[in-house]
Length: 104
Image 1 (cartoon, rainbow, N blue to C red):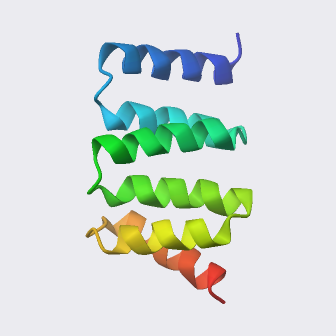
Image 2: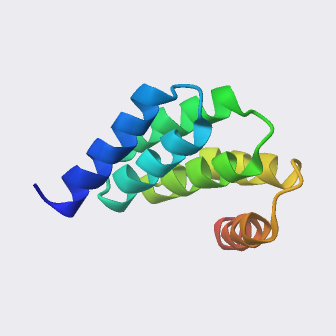
């Protein structure tokens, strides 16, 4: 089993143990995104947002997936939403930089 499969297995096991922990879905979404499995990443980011709708980090992550998929309008909407939710410094920077690129 490769690193990808191991990472997915670990994330899925964590989700099975704590299905209401948005952070575990975020970790799995990042694995999916890294391997360009965008539909699966979106499913997990949507779950993150369902569980923690006021956490900017998950909107930035989902915006990145939309951006990778070429869904410019959806990406912009998520980045803008993230900026309204008092993001941490790294999420603030990622959202603002992405918006600057997309709106240029």
